[in-house]
Length: 211
Image 1 (cartoon, rainbow, N blue to C red):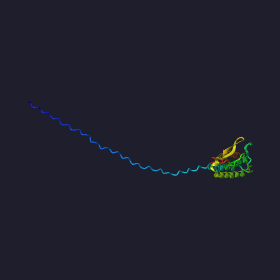
Image 2: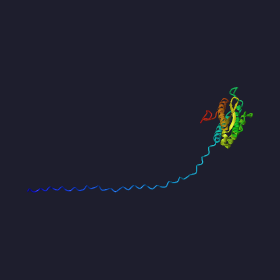
Image 3: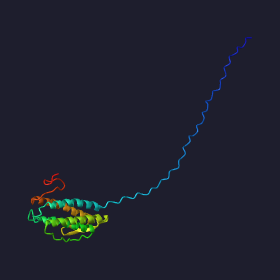
Image 4: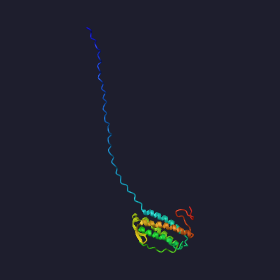
């Protein structure tokens, strides 16, 4: 009998290696929450008081009136009745307007303005008019610096048109009188030149007072 050939044994398959298990990641520790800081309550700041509008007015009045007095003193003192035209006011009457306006401004500040106003007669000489103007300006400046902010809006009667009276804030009227002073000061500077007087520096140099 023919001998049976023994077949070669196939090598036994090695079991597949299982991948090693990676150690499970531990959850990252969250940083411990710090206790919230308690808001420090600071006392509310006290607001600064609003500036008194009369202070600005008083400063401007003092400044402008010193220039007006300079223009008044530059006019020839021996020509109080000078008129550039028959329908124009005399130099003395024009300068007296400055005094009357300051008297009205003083009443507007004090709350005693009455209409129609009673205008006193002017003195006879220009030096007296100038002295009266400077005295009245000093009174108005002092009254303005002593006035309360609420007085600035206190209603006062004044002309609102031909034959018409209406109320205006006292501060408005005081400033109106100052604006009118500046207006008539320019008028007076023309009188000065025509009467042969000097025209001093007002807001800038002049031929008689160069910078």
